[in-house]
Length: 347
Image 1 (cartoon, helix red, strand yellow):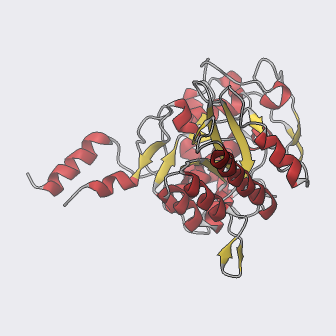
Image 2 (cartoon, one colour; image 1 turned 60 degrees about the vertical axis):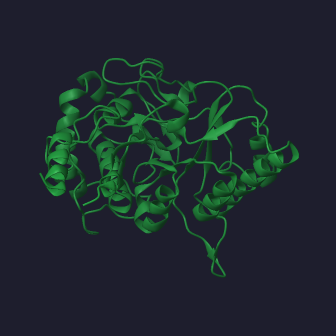
Image 3 (tube, helix red, strand yellow; image 1 turned 135 degrees about the vertical axis):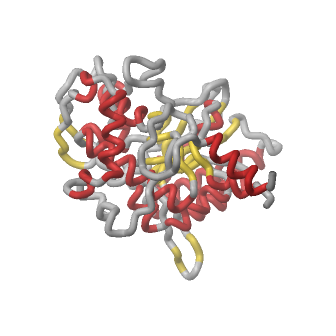
């Protein structure tokens, strides 16, 4: 049998269903049964995070096919949890029992084990002295005099200098604006993951809107990188069991954090840097939240990485924590599909 036929047989045996639509009825970390559709620019929602996804974007097959899966596997009780009222940014009015449905903003509730309709969240690192390093909201590009400054690229450069990998939770809108930066995150060995299309609090979205936030971002990420990820970070940590179950049904684990830099809550860069430096000598493992959304937040991220390098230089090249991407520090599979694996075949 020729190598080409062997390859075809491998693909057929590994992926029983053809890659023809956006439906992905799988468990978290399981191989995909279909790939996202190729969308032209008119089929994507607006690149405007102030606008909720509505209208034709909700009735499109990419959303409705996935909704059919959600309705089959998510308990009706969870689908019936009331939608929150949106106020501004991460501020919402929650209309159900925050304890019963594990609403994270109320008490930092996380699902440590699976339940009826959902699986356990990822929110820290397993083991001891592990640091899961994560950045939200990019990718961004800020070029000054022909040089990347205080953006995703400069963060990557400093990560490379340290020999460290991180997780970049990217929004669909910014993936569409900066697809090359999204691809470079992958090419340099970092984990990439979803952070929704509009960055709205997900409990303020209807079931169809939650699906749309996921599926359009998934399509943009796959188009830019050739990967389908297994992590979804809800903006502002705004998640309850309705959001959790819908994400899980579509193959995504909710990814939270337990150390926050406060880089979006202040204009005092030095105070944020001191918060981050305070993590250096902590014995427990954790996942941190920083942002690469603005030059200000990205500049702090760069300064923090340089502070790690300075610490190592002053301590004989040793840093007390093992820094990695979030999936690695939890032993999770970061991708459900990776097109680069197919390129390893020698025809």
